[in-house]
Image 1 (cartoon, rainbow, N blue to C red):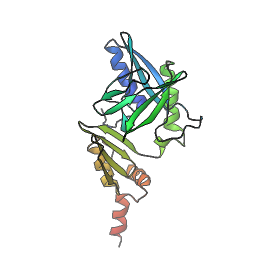
Image 2 (cartoon, one colour):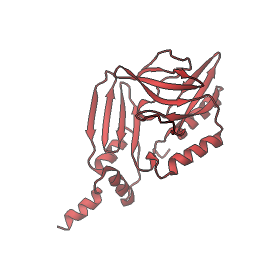
Image 3 (cartoon, rainbow, N blue to C red):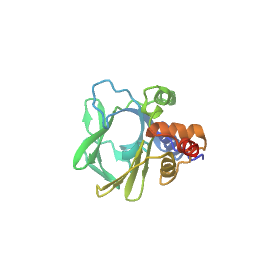
Image 4 (cartoon, rainbow, N blue to C red):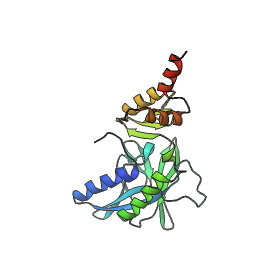
Length: 222
């Protein structure tokens, strides 16, 4: 209601509750994020996803994985390549674990690894608390936003705004001011941030610049 967006724990908890209210058999799962990371065996489980059972088939459903969020359910059938409106995915199995992979520029890239152990809501609460309060968590020091359009994906990471088209073209735009950052968050992402110098200072810290209000004060003083 406040147009503040959300991350995987919030988005998938809400989606899971909606599915349960509609009568679906839903389980919460937890995953280790592999996207753009090297797996040295020390990665914690910091992502939440859903397993939905529909008849004889189980599906992976996830509305909270940023720039490569699924736009359709993916069957939990190992090594079957599956097409969605925004890309190809597969779920290979290794031992007792599954990995969600996306086909990116002709190569299969791992997004996250998980098993089928159901997580209670208390488990998810602990994971969310860790991710949102641990000092070294990227959610404490970076700005990340993602949104799926009809024929593209929008992604924001700190001072870089990118549009990924379905034909694999990319449009990259640097964000060099707090005013511009606020405008990009507002549109296309639809995120409304509160006004105030404290918020602007925090945004400027992410960009590595002075806030616009500070710049105006410096300019007015000569």
